[in-house]
Amino acid sequence: MEPNHGGAGILGAGPSASRFRLNPDARAFHPRINWAPEEDRCCFLTFSNGYPIEELSIISFFNEKFGPNCVERVYVHRPVGQPPLFGKVVFRSVLMPALVLQGKDLQKYLVDGNPMWCKKYDREKAQQVDN
Image (cartoon, rainbow, N blue to C red):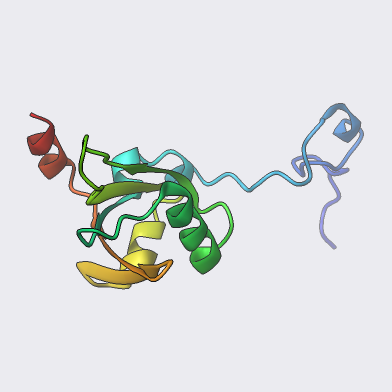
């Protein structure tokens, strides 16, 4: 016979459960995923010259292909007087870049019929471009 602790140690069980106001629809908390640095949750994106892709199209593409709300945000570099050639997608999970790249260094996707190349975001290369 297993001991009965009256629900002690079980969240939502026992006499004190009514004091907690937890959201039953809240996502599970995963410290390794939720607290990963942004650089570890990113992919660098490049577009073919003359075929830029809008931020909302990129977000929609990833959310449809890999699951809703997988994208935290998208940046597209927009130089004055020229079409965008690259950007960065920040995912909510540190696992997403590996899923997107499917074990490759470079992965091609078509977004609204336009080619988009993805590779792992390299913080050191990004800092070189900014300097």
